[in-house]
Amino acid sequence: MSFDWKTYQPLLIPNIPGLADIKVYEQHGGYVQYKKVLGDQTTWTPEAVTNEVKSSGLRGRGGAGFNTGLKWSFMPKPDGGPRYIAANGDESEPGTFKDRTIFEFNPHSFIEGALIAAYAMRITAVYVYIRGEYRSWIRMMEKAIADAYAAGHIGKNIHGSGFSTDMYVHSGAGAYICGEESSLMESLEGKRGYPRVKPPFPAQRGLWGRPTTINNIETLANVPLILRIGAEAYSQIGAKTHPGPLLYGISGHVNKPGVYEFPSGMPIETLIHEVCGGVKGGKKVKAVIPGGSSTPPLRGDQLAGVCMDSDSLRTAGSMLGTAGMVVMDEDTDLVDVLTRIAHFYHHESCGQCTPCREGTGWLEKTLKKIRRGDGTPRDLELLLDICTQMEGRTICALADAAAWPVRYTITRFREDFEARVKTPVHAHA
Amino acid sequence: MATYVFTAEQLAQIEAIKSRYPSVQSATMPVLWLAQDAFGHVDADVQQLVADTLGLPASHVHGVATFYTQYYKEKKGKHVLDVCTCLSCHISGGYDMLHHLENRLGIKAGETTPDGLFTIQSVECLGACGYAPMMQITNDVFVNELTPEKLDQVIDTLKKGGSPDFEPIGLVNNRETA
Ligand SMILES: Cc1cc2nc3c(=O)[nH]c(=O)nc-3n(C[C@H](O)[C@H](O)[C@H](O)COP(=O)(O)O)c2cc1C
Ligand code: SF4
Ligand code: FES
Image (cartoon, each protein chain N blue to C red):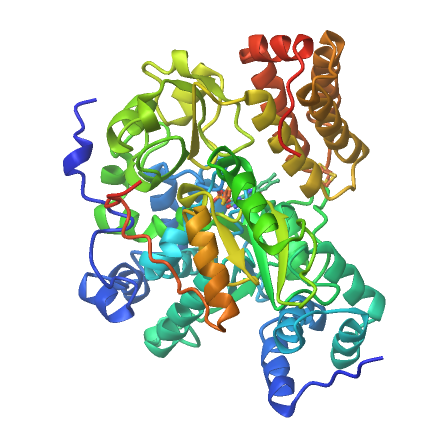
């Protein structure tokens, strides 16, 4: 890559002090794209906006990586009734902590993007679902939305355009599953967050039975940029099949963890050894989880040339997920780490489906047994067997998210597990 | 049985909350939050108050309150210390931080000190993985990059009636320290 990360100027979260303030945002070209669209609705028909986003190649940043414009085009024709966007700021997948930087440093880019999306899909209200733990950031978003109302960007007949929409924040209250789109809608409807069986899909029957589109916060924050530089220029940023700037949340054993913005497709080794200043204590990398806890870990000795885009990671045997990268050094006890991951998914399973409810429990129990030193080689086979019985057999993808790390940590770091089923070691409670 | 009532001002806030949604049921979560802020918890009596105020079955409100971990279904300590022990925090010493707090306060995770001042909980990822190990205080402020010394300072501050400030982490791409 001829790209020089050191001179890269962030586009999603530009380095402008005070940008969270609506006045500063407007001084730097904020809400101009939105007004451009509203002011020339003959050029910028809802279909034209949707097509621009579609041809930019923008793919969802919430984990599944679906083409955003294409998703918008699934919304049925307006029938005069209410239609919704549920913006997903649940951000609960372990290793993921990027959307909060948008709330904190550039909330209006998200609001502007959500409003353009609302125009493109003739949305009557946008609900911004933010995990309850982000109370500090919920306050920031409530202020930003109130300021956008006061500036006339949200409400009735916005800037005399004839377009009206509302925007509200809805706070979660501690449940990972509510990041799953249908669970999120149940939660918005004031219920326990049990995922819904699909079909019907949200575009047909979503919130309160009405057409709904669910997009991640970072996804929507990209929309003003697409309209500013054009779909063509946007599609040239970063990796071809997964273009655009990307927020990389990097944690674990690196010297400078944090959220970094670069084009998609950054080589993992550049991120670790250059951007993040290398591994703490100069140690070697043992494993990297590229995109949140559910994405299969990669071996530290097989990172050469692997880049943070969906194609490269698929070839390497993993997924981009949320680009929440967790780096683990050579001294990391992967049996212990995997046990902790299994505990997370067991704790967060909503319990509707037997393979998930029982499977996540068995994964945790069996891994704890191995960690204690009471495991047998047969337990490794049992774990893989449980994974097979969970994958693709449930209402939502939490069961897969729980099974993948188990399957791939065991198969890729087999020696660690085999050593453990023979040599007992005691670890944390 | 304790009796809980909403003030006129809180009732006005509840009306404002209801106006944001096409169904009253959707007000359940925000009103549970409002009640927890007002009374410190949402035990069975508070759940009943929420149900009566919204005109919803108590069983519905109970079902929602029990699904979400951040609602306190019973009284907790004045300060609830939620220490993240999930993936990134775990590999960065999250359990060491938890154990330091347990030793300092003489209680185990899930327990409350006899003076009712502190509850400690071991929690799942809080979305601050790059600033691990970390904790959250009573569903509010995040305390990042914990060390035993920093934990001691936080305890001392809380005991004196103070509260740690929101910790800014700096713009993206500008992170200088580890
Ligand atoms: C168990 C589970 C948890 C999820 N959590 C989140 C989340 O916290 N944030 C998010 O944006 N998407 C999450 N998703 C993905 C959403 O279901 C959905 O695909 C996404 O919000 C769509 O937005 P996008 O197309 O912009 O990525 C989760 C999915 C599953 C199965
Ligand atoms: S897969 Fe798990 S989390 Fe998803 S609906 Fe079924 S039981 Fe619930
Ligand atoms: S793992 Fe602790 S904040 Fe994410």
